[in-house]
Image (cartoon, rainbow, N blue to C red):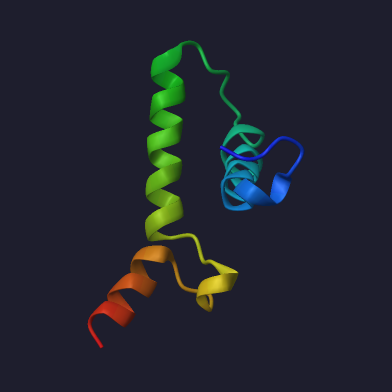
Length: 73
């Protein structure tokens, strides 16, 4: 929970949800019919975000690749 009027308190969460909306929700070609569609889209995006999406702050690696690289060294 952030303090009132202080967006920097949860900047990481805001950044993630911004990416989620732009990359998963706004680019959808199929209309969501029910909650199951939302769950499926969210699960697919989370898998992509963790395993495939390059992160600038991680040197262009995905979070799982970054973890594997530096955990095993």
